Length: 282
Image (cartoon, rainbow, N blue to C red):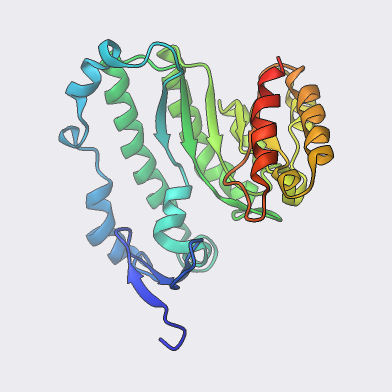
């Protein structure tokens, strides 16, 4: 291509445009999961639980080898984020609203059931975990990539089922990684058992933990929330962030840290200063 980019189909069937020298989110050019035939032939067979694909013997001996001095989490997968990775944002939107709503619901249910059985098989081995965690990334700077009503109808039941399973095995902290403005989806997650916000992206769109705590009470926990833009400024800006973190940490159930990568243009000495000073907050 004239700009030196390449079109590459990944293992999910998504065709991405890769540009040389750019390490960021690639452009999504095309995708395979467009209709019922593609789902039945290419995807449904891979979305079936198979015990031999899970190293259950590893988990049977997990408690003997797991670290004793750090929290250990169980990855719960994704209800919608991984499907977005397969269809692209554009493809997911077409499936939901213009092409085949029944097919889209079938995709969500099939993928969620496979993941549920994976989690169930691991927990049945007796392996112990301190927390569980989802990855989603289904929001952007103006809100969710899916209508909250559709999300409620398609996804809420799967969060509840998986989270209820975790709690039967003593896992009470269940976190979820979703970038972007998550405000409209937070009630759905919280009401169905997700109780920890991560990340809390304050730097670009002003996401905040305090309003969520005020809205949902002490049952809502959080990780993140430090405005890393301060690292590009000066010590006074970092001090202001440290003071704000002190106030959030005083509420309990909150772990302050910068979200994602440290930005280009950040001053290393300010990052070092923050790393030392944040340790003093109790």
